Amino acid sequence: MLSDAHKPSHEETPDDVESVTDETDPLADLPHVPHHVNKEIFRSSMKALLLLVAVLLIVGSGIGYLVGAMAGVYGALLGVGVTLIFSGTTIWSMIYTADKSPNVSMAVVMGAWVAKMIVFITIMAILGGHDFYHKIIFAVIVLIGVIGSAILDMRAVTKGRLPYVTP
Image 1: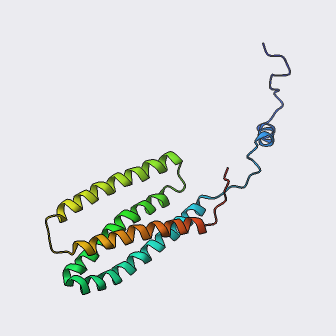
Image 2 (image 1 turned 120 degrees about the vertical axis):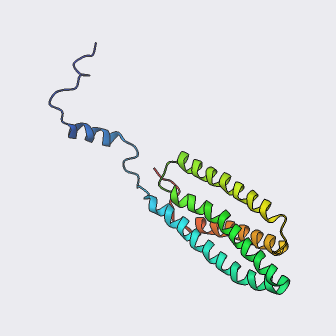
Image 3 (image 1 turned 180 degrees about the vertical axis):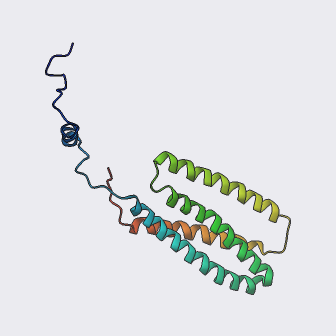
């Protein structure tokens, strides 16, 4: 049986109960980091990716034309497209899940990765037998694009103003 000291009194109001729980909550005084802070970091990463893709499109097409005429241009265009699919999907999924739970974020990122792999394998299977594009220009553009995007992502995260500790 409970003693009278452990029984809630009928005079207590919900306000009294909340004030007691607020005082005992150790996280109540910690600052709250809004979700838009994460989204701002990922949006800056997306802007950097779009700038990288634009530069790759212009410079890659020019160099592709000098190296392999129109086949070089097609290789550059395909490489830019694959780069945008690979890197853009990852950044989009991070923007989309910035305010979601870690489990949802992981599920979306992994699902996007599996979808990218399926799309990439399909693209390579379709393009494998064709010779209308310059394969080396394609590979170089994809390599520069994916590595450049990873570097820009790392830069956006390290330059972003996100606290080290969040409640």
